[in-house]
Length: 258
Image 1 (cartoon, one colour):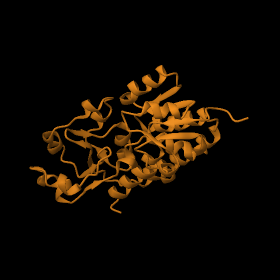
Image 2 (cartoon, rainbow, N blue to C red):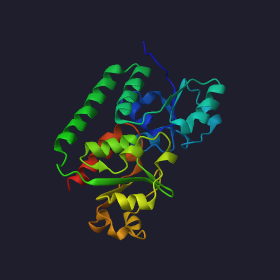
Image 3 (cartoon, rainbow, N blue to C red):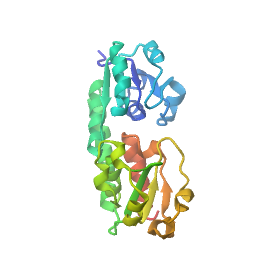
């Protein structure tokens, strides 16, 4: 007998990716418009939501047994679906450990605990390998999640920077639960003197040369050495396996000079 919800709508992209990996692709009946991985999901499933908004009627028309969301920014949306009689689960992972826990939770929800455990072990092995190969000279890193206002990286990104061999110059700020508490000033960035600047703007393309041309930034070590780069937001700002498989690996390659 198959257990767990049979019709799942994912309002967050990382849940789509994880469910596909757990062998539950057939249960996914609707996805977020921000879904990138796996590529076939965009071809196979209807897109019913942005990030903080969704077409409630379209979600309800899919007759979901469960709707999955992420973070306090989707709380009102999930509440509206609950009032419409839909079962929901809101994830709120902010750390690498939280990402791994979310995989276990999804595995439990779709009765695939063994597949979830195997995926977690694979991700843990990847992290252990990266940690063992990290450079001994740890570059100072400024991660920019948004540009106006400037927002530094969230906690799991800060942890990935450390795993890859860097030192997040705003590590303390990264632990703040709200994005508003992670706003940084140009003066703070200049004072931190990062040796790497990594930008990943939520859903928007970043041009590193524009960062390098900011007034007063030409004296930053990262700018002088040309160590300013973009990592696509789908690769690091969605708190699922891809943040480790792609985000962490790209950070490690950059810091190692590959």
